[in-house]
Image (cartoon, rainbow, N blue to C red):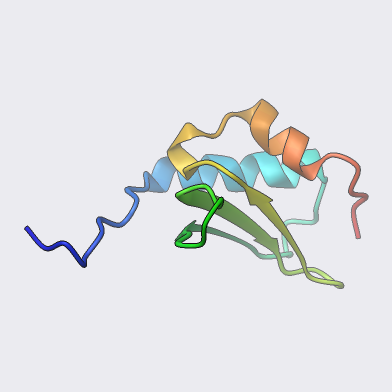
Length: 88
């Protein structure tokens, strides 16, 4: 056991694809606009341990942060994070 190495958050590739599909549906976006889903660990005080970042590579590029692991996200959580943002 290493005290310095933390486990990386586990992701489910099928759930990542589902989050992308929800993002295309919610914004809505053209299928030719790439979306990247990343899970990041935060080591700063007061920051949640894991956040999911949705990056929409349109013009202009946009990023949305959700303070939860990707496997914990529901359609409603993604919709709430993307709320109020019009498609480009």
